[in-house]
Length: 131
Image (tube, rainbow, N blue to C red; front, side, top):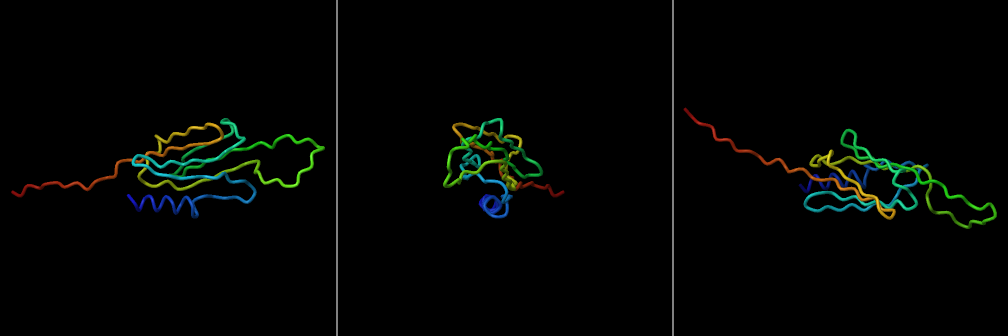
């Protein structure tokens, strides 16, 4: 429901992301359709083998490494804004997701993670015979 989504966004954009000042953080978009939460992360210059994802205790973590490019020692750099090295981002998943069905696709430097929603538990009504 809406409260799960609000909680998800609060955790995701609020304190949910663990950010470390010594690492760079990729840009991320989050969207939702009727069946899943979709997380899209820009990871240019990273190969698929350098990306790790796991879920532990309802927390999804995406981590990896972008290797430094070899630089010509004769080159002069006036600005270096691109991040290199380790990155790690984690967030609390909402309760209404199916963790073992999470999928990820990496293409053209973009990681797309699909976090499927489970069916909301509906209240049951049970008739009781009076004898």
